[in-house]
Length: 453
Image 1 (cartoon, rainbow, N blue to C red):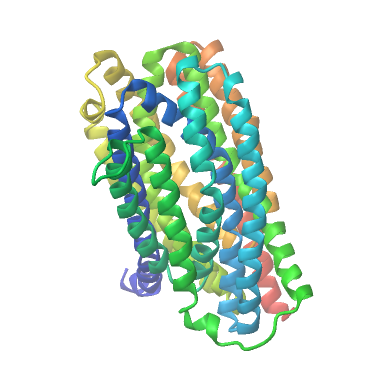
Image 2: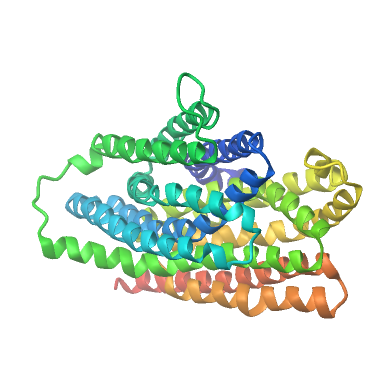
């Protein structure tokens, strides 16, 4: 046991050291989201519903952009791991150019969504508010993608504290801006829902400015005085796009699958939809922790990959899995014990509470598979393997999970709970497929080391 502890302890420490700032930043984002909703709720149900509709639509290009940007981390990690500082300087330039270009593409997608909003069968009274709010927050896609460029670069350099600091600063600005612009405090005009949009846009502009200032101070990016040619920059842009598109599709397909599940529950009952929203909010707590460990895992795997030490890659991978298994056990135990009480934090409706408590049981089952697939996908990102995992994700969610949910709900007689039964099935199969993919890549890396190729 002592030998086992000595073997894995350094991996536990390093992974958690990288993960903690990511988790803190995510907690801050969730907190700001809750505060936003509380402030907007004071304007009335129409404004709250309008904001929810606009944010749901904006999440689609945003999630793709976040996934796309993740390609920067393993590429940076590999260059940093092999001390290739000229490559790091080129990646920095390529990362910002690529993400700005992607921001323009995502901005055009937002434009299309804006004009489609009246045709999405939503209550007519919320459409004017939603379109106005959406048009403001859509402008934030450019500064947000600039921020993500710097965030992923710094994480590839094993520095997760920069993004945490910038995010927390922006969160404070967002809350203060909401207080000032939504209600007209401190001499500002009362802009209502649009005030919340302007506050969000301002906070994201600050994020972009701050990350640029922070990035300029990172020592690994200052160690090269080489001039980066246009052809070298184009090469880095090409590498990021090649890796980023399947990563973006991976995250997009996962998020959109849960959105589709919510739509199907809405076909059955309002009670089921309310319960679904509550339990999805609870699931975010576990997801946030696992995603933080996943970010640390990607960084470490990418650097070990650059040094061509597959044994350390395997040890780091196993250590991350062990960490999330412990997390799942603790979190799931709490969910099971408190499953009848937790929904009461969100509603007093007895039917919604009863439905949510049943969904929590399914949540406990799929949490383990979700944690596994998050870590496995993070390992694959660290290995710069994205195309095949992207296809496996698409198959798992839309080829298996969603059809199974539909069958269980509408044909199998499980109704609202049936929609949730598709989650552990899809996530379990996705995790298993990722596991086989990782084993194949590990064997290839070991063979390459033995043969010296």
